Length: 180
Image (tube, rainbow, N blue to C red):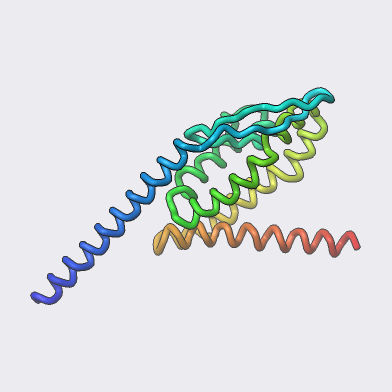
């Protein structure tokens, strides 16, 4: 019985040290975010180009989804924010993915969102061919991987991303096959 008590204490100490490591990592990331520079983007507006400066905020914006749905308060945009903040950003794999994704996404999204706000046809096309299907596919992927969250939040988020990407690849392959 004494050995089981010492094993429990060791596992508890390991869990506590992992929690401390996780908190330290979060603090370092918060410090890095505070030091982020102002980023300039070229935006298209009424046939002329202008440079717009954006500062990273505490909560990064979903520029394209907001432009397509007309409000950052729309339920679809709110779903994207909730998923990012309450699931993806609470895992190491999710935070790593978001660093890469944000570097890519914020390189074009403000200018694309500006264009979409000015062009109703393009906005509707983007909304119904890209943004809405992406949101629905993300919801389905999340639903399929939800049981994994009982085992590991990391596995659930990684699985959601994997199902999402594989489904996108399959859909793209089917469409290209049908078009050729």
